[in-house]
Amino acid sequence: MDHKHLNYFLALAKTLHFSRASELCHISAPTLSRNIKQLEDEVGVMLFLRDNRSVKLTREGVAFIDYATSTLANWQHFKTHLTEPQQHIYGNVSIYCSVTASYSFLHHILEQLRAHHPHIEITLNTGDPALAINRVLDGHEAMAIAARPTKLPAQIAFVKIGHTPLVFIAPKIPCPITEKLASTAKQIDWSALEFIVPEQGFSRQRLEQWWRKNNVHGKIYAQVAGHEAIVSMVSLGLGIAMIPKIVLDNSPLQDKVQVLSTDTAAPSGIDIGLAVLHKELNDPAISALWNIAQNMGEKVL
Image 1 (cartoon, rainbow, N blue to C red):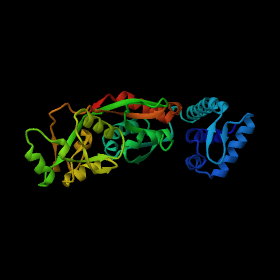
Image 2 (image 1 turned 135 degrees about the vertical axis):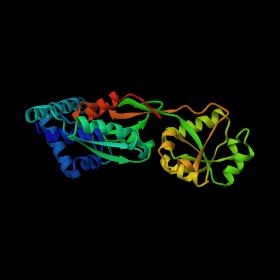
Image 3 (image 1 turned 90 degrees about the vertical axis):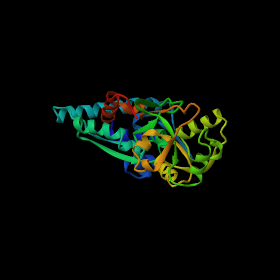
Image 4 (image 1 turned 180 degrees about the vertical axis):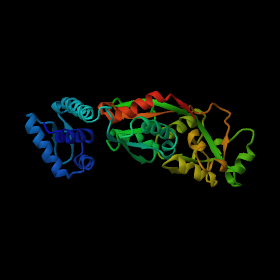
């Protein structure tokens, strides 16, 4: 059985989208479709149900995932053992994370990776941390550094690598926000302040929960993708915000904002970890990063 066909099958099984899978495989969608048909002819059953609008795995297709994954993993192990007596691990792993995570958590992981597995290559994409888990679920990247959601999807394996509190920040420059804070120095009137909030994600959920718990009628000045941009907007006097402390600690603008203390209990912090699909852990390169993350120990920031 052609290993190329197995790789194509796994890409389509992961994305359930011919165009996206063909991009991952660096071939055209018609070529991918033709190869999948050849594989189905060889296996003797349909692995996918497809029409003009959707692609779904058949029962046989679901079962075939384990076969394809283990076959490719065994083949990779055999090649490595045959050509490299020291059993170096080769491969490319795509990772998604926020800008802040790229030079904090990811930096420590890649230090260990370079020391122990120098032949593994990394493709890094950065963006809004609220998208991290979905980027892995949708097959855009193999792994992501992400906040652990309240309910972790069943397909996702998650190893905790750190924890960060959530803090409220406000501008330092003279502006309507600092004037309001000065006038209510003894007890902050949170409902009178404008908030810069994330467009989506775990931090947004935690803020809204805190509003409800403390009967705060939060006024939203702007909704922003990415915590780093939120710090910038707060420093300009446009509002206050709730952000992970790790973002503030790594921001070049941290001396332009002030941390606000709350009379009520602060929102609970965020567990941060490495997320990957369970079925991807058979890949030797992905497994190597996973093991590094497991052995890192928790980092509290």
